[in-house]
Image (tube, rainbow, N blue to C red; front, top):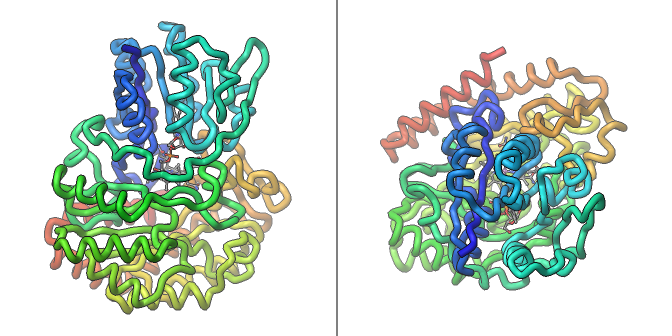
Length: 472
Ligand code: B12
């Protein structure tokens, strides 16, 4: 039986989350798990090696791979981890040149040609959704068929780099099996979402839709998954039943970019949870122009406790420039409706946009304090490969394109007229002035009273916050 290892590559907490490490997730590598489930079902001896979350170094990871001696190594990488993945496979190939290295994920899907040219140790790159492609690719290798017959890949053919036709997206996602959780080391107790994303343990993360209807200039979700598609309500219900009944999960963080877009689906899932009295708390992410109080109240009855929204900026001028396609009025009414239903609200903001000024940053800070948010998260504007922003960044400021620095915390892009120091000063000011308000402190105390086991995670959150505000 042929052997494949799927690798979540080494990446330290510091590289990934900077000063917010204490609050970072040990999130399930959901994409890799989906792929590993498919190859396992197809009869390959399949292992999932999660070096990111186990904190393995490159040397330890190489050793583990050599010991298992697989035929194939499948790595999932984002832009931040592509250099480490290349260095690791280069070393690996010095010791065993027969292992075929297959790379997939957000980065290669967005910058396929450049990546394959730069890194000789990658044999094949898989572009976009991987479940169908990996099976065809492995079959082609096993049967010595030309790789040109496999859609959705990029590979080396002598000195040339060849890209095959793009594979159409899977129309009916329900054809995919439920994740084989046993491929993970102790999914119930080892993994958990980031500190602000769960209220009870054991907690886990799932993704129930793919793609996005939006056209924001800074996001490359479309490059991987195209337009928005979802698993059916029935599939999600089976997933929830499996997690709660067979794995003891009590809290689920639904990491979809836009969970509530398909309203009827959400309603069916909620009714199922309510009618079957499933002991579950859950939270989700959404675009900020979706939903209303009626839907939020139903979600609350079904155990939802928080919705996280991508708000990005408190300046209408900036929202228009980044093509967020939403007004400040709509953002405010969605947040108020969510709050009215008794749910916690969390806003994701970006600082250092194209055309950002001290004035627009101040507008953002005022706006985030004016609307009834309970929690917020700041990232620095980072033009990622595959996005429109990546191509036009130089027009708006200076951009350090070093891939291994693009962790959304490091100020890789500095808009004209601002400096990294100004951005950092305002970020710290935003964190301080947002959290150290009586309403926010009281809301956290409320969580501890309702779910006393939260003390530890909230202390971790507080530690991350203090480090973020007071470190140099
Ligand atoms: C959940 C999530 C997280 C979680 C868990 C990450 C994980 N390892 O799964 C946490 C919070 C930890 C996280 C952290 C980060 N994330 Co994140 N995250 C996501 C999110 C919202 C969903 C990922 C997911 O599970 N999707 C569903 C699965 C099924 O899709 P998938 O993982 O892409 O896998 C499919 C294909 O890509 C492909 N594939 C993937 N890997 C491989 C490997 C092989 C061998 C093959 C054949 C195919 C293949 O096949 C899979 C199945 O179809 C995405 C946005 C999105 N909607 O996808 C961002 C996203 C992946 N994250 C992103 C970023 C930038 C980060 C961070 C750098 C940010 C940060 N500092 O926190 C870190 C990096 C950490 C890391 N090691 O990945 C970017 C990556 C963009 C880029 N070019 O780099 C994305 C695309 C968001 C965005 N739009 O900008 N993230």
